[in-house]
Amino acid sequence: MVDRRRILQATAAMGAAAALSQQAGWAWAAGQGRKSTLNPNKIRKYVTPLAVLPVLAPARREAGGPDHYLVGVRQFRQQILPRGMPRTTVWGYGDGSNPRSFRTPSATIEARVDRPVRVTWANELVDADGGYRPHLLAVDPTLHWANPPGGSTGRDTRPAFTATPGPYRGPVPIVTHLHGGRSLQDSCGYPEAWYLPEARDIPRGHATAGSFYDEFGDEFAQRHGAAWKPGTATFHYGNDQRAATLWYHDHTLGMTRVNVYAGLSGFFLLRGGSGDLAPGVLPGPAPGPNDRPGTRYYEIPLMVQDRSFNADGSLFYPASRAFTDDAGPYVPNGPFPPIWNPAFLANTMTVNGSTWPVLEVEPRRYRLRLLNGCNSRVLIMKLVTERLAPRPAPAALPIWQIGNDGGFLPEPVSLRQLLLGPAERADVIVDFTGLREGTELYLVNEGPDELCGDNFDPSDPATTGQVMKFTVGRLTGKDRSVPPEHLELPRIRPLGRASRTRKLALDEQLGDDQSIKMMLCTIDADGHAKPQHWHDPITERPALHATEIWELHNWSAHAHPIHLHVVQFEVLGRGKDGTQPPRPGDRGTKDTVLTFPGEITRVKATFDLAGRYVWHCHLLEHEDNDMMRPFRVG
Image (tube, rainbow, N blue to C red; front, side):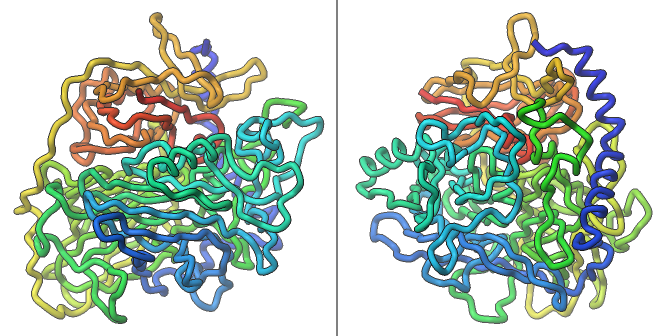
């Protein structure tokens, strides 16, 4: 059982040291990077036009059947820093038949409600000679992770060592998860269903696929009559859900943080059905797969991510636990992983794969689909007229939120600031109507430069406090969209009565060696938290079609975004006792909810797809080190 008093003492010390720890981390980075680390203040802002993410065209459309895509993962170089600075080697998804389509964030997949999509995800992380590519970043092999060197008996385990190891340099496993999508277990991107590229030099004895790859591949073949080929997995998305902003990203066990940071993410937009609005009601058009050059868009997806760079343009990500603290001794002489860090908040903001971009807009309404794609950073965003305005920054324009993770809200909400935890999405309308040509507005971030807790200082106003710039140009045509305050959004069908309430906790596990680890826990009849590791027996087993309430007790010192695979849930309440109403942006349905320290967050979901899935914290560093649990439906 967790010793509450010791935990509180330890986390109080952690909280007091959090900002200093991040500053110490940057001091470490500067020390390590006297030769290489790039100072973010030397990166020019608002000189790169915003990249409007392209849309993938299906490889083929099946009459009366699904749209088929072949999507590979490759390594390439991209101009993320402003022109004149070095390009960055990254990973990304793209059309396997078109090398020019690969980028990060990757091209959008557009889908229609109730029209299935079938994607073959191919691991193409090989070089020109067919040899495997090692990871761009340092992979800690002491976690409970995919562990290809463990072979068929040791894969998906926490391996034992006789000496502290260096980073894993072998072939890289991937598996892609459609975040917010409804799919059976064989297509959900289960963390232990990973697979290596089909490279010519896979080391002898390595496992080439995860523990569930063969089982799920057999299920898929029986259900759809198509076998998975080595180095690939084909997933089927039925799209039988509300129109919504979804996204796809890597989900490999113990490696999600580094695979996503390297570039593996993209939008998946679901349109149509009774949960959508008629064309023309909202600002448009949005990007399409066969658009002419120069097409003007009034609906634009925006993926906000923080990144750090070395002077040669390469990605900077900590290669040692010393970045965060002086923890030790390291495995096997102590409990601390030598490379993994409890969190990483980078020092440079990117939007759609460019640092601090600028978008010229017309004086009319725009629909922006915002996604917090950061590993650990909570964003609190505003639109202001001065990029270095005194804190708190004055809001120049209201942000009208019309949707979230699961689709449209019950009604539009006018906000002065937009709070998004990692993986959360917001569908918003910004009205530039009436602004004079040449007006400049800035999307700023007042979230913390540390893990978000009860009290924090806003982010650095000169760097991570700035996100992107909007410059108002001239109007080229009449805006026929409906003003957001007059929108009537589609009706949301409420979930039925819950048959069970589960009490679960987010807490720190404190060992005898004083090491602290974020954990998901069950709560026993006496109110004590029992930490559950990834490998422990499954404790959450909803019956098929059951509707349950999950009470998430956050007993930790930080906010955690909690994501449940395969379901969209209703947020019922928040606060010290879980009875306060949800925030306006949390109404409707969601798949990720930001839980705050010392509060109970109550969510209700119907589990109507049988199979094995996961729920976890979407702070990717936490997810990768045991803050994730399987659950079984049916």
